[in-house]
Length: 111
Length: 113
Image 1 (cartoon, chains in turn brown, yellow):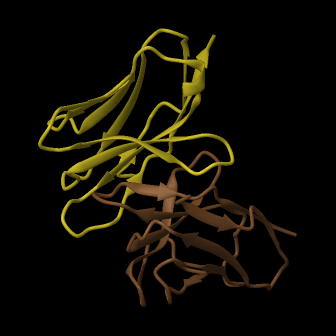
Image 2 (cartoon, rainbow over the protein chains, first blue to last red):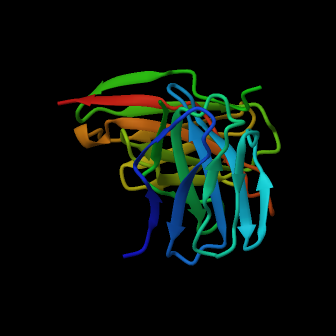
């Protein structure tokens, strides 16, 4: 059935390591998004992509990178430059008129 | 600068009563507003939205009211049920080709049986 799949559910990063969070959707949506949620905070936009091979920085893009080689996939890499990566990461895709559908999230922690 | 504010971190109501969640915004360019519901360790799910050309939108037990002059919107849940217990996020966007949603910090609603 249709939806957004994020993997893994939990991820641990060592100092100096890059890690990649997966996001796949089979909803045929053009636009996809990555958000970060910290405790007691709202969702903050990291990157978004409106079409394949194009993406834009959000409000907190530093230390992150993305690619959009296929419509279905929008992976997020948390680089070693991101000094405070511990958070809950949410991927979303957009159906219409800003109605975004979210995956179940990936919780990233630092070892 | 927080453009979407949910000033109540938490709200507790009795089952069967009305829940009212509030949201204020500062950006007068926002013209589309959404409410999302989020359970722990899950992604948010879309609840209801409203365009700035309306002042009310209803969907079953959920009603959203928009007061543009006060830059204020509210979500009413009637009657409240224990399964409504979750964090509710208000979000806003500027229309047209702008895809970005700006979220508030959320309000934790607890509905007591």
